[in-house]
Image (cartoon, rainbow, N blue to C red; front, side):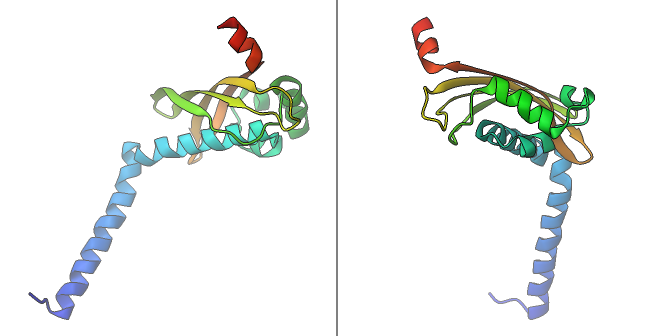
Length: 156
């Protein structure tokens, strides 16, 4: 069965219109929001683990405790270096959702990462919360714990 050329063009336009409508409507139902929040979480954790504190700082929300306390990028980097035990080789975090309410979403994340200096692997645990601000997901809360893998194995 063949269709006249003008009918094929109309079908293409209708298909394109449906695609555009779906792209406009789906974010309103949270489909893209959760993916974008997860991507921001993955990016922040990767930057932080690698010691790229400038990029991690750029993902902090104005409502975060660090920015509320007027931390500069340099102060954030110094404070992070003292407590996080890295930098680490890239690794995969196991990220699990904790909750989502309106414009706030929270995750927990764990990983075993290898420090770039060759020292003992570290078991990482963290909690991270994000808030939707100005059309983007930004980190509003972050807590990170790094423990040598040997200590975790000995305690188990």
